Image 1 (cartoon, rainbow, N blue to C red):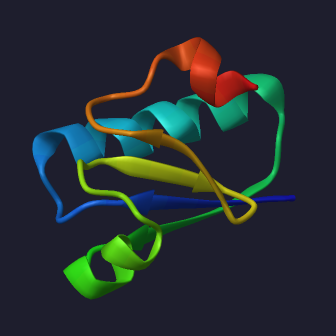
Image 2 (image 1 turned 60 degrees about the vertical axis):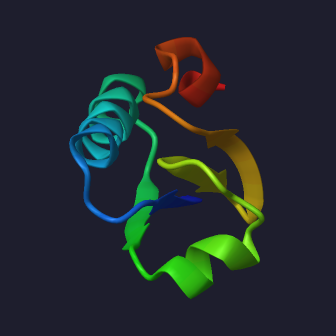
Length: 74
């Protein structure tokens, strides 16, 4: 199971990123634990200054704007 966190304050891009991740996980049959981190101090702990950010298994894999499907799929 992949532990995925979406870092962001709830903007449209953040919501679209969550939807994209859920769709990709379903398409690929991958089990995920998906959570939202919306508090700025928590987001900043990851070093993300532009949201949404995506953290997979503790590693920041994306920051700023909606990620590309291929970037998330890997």
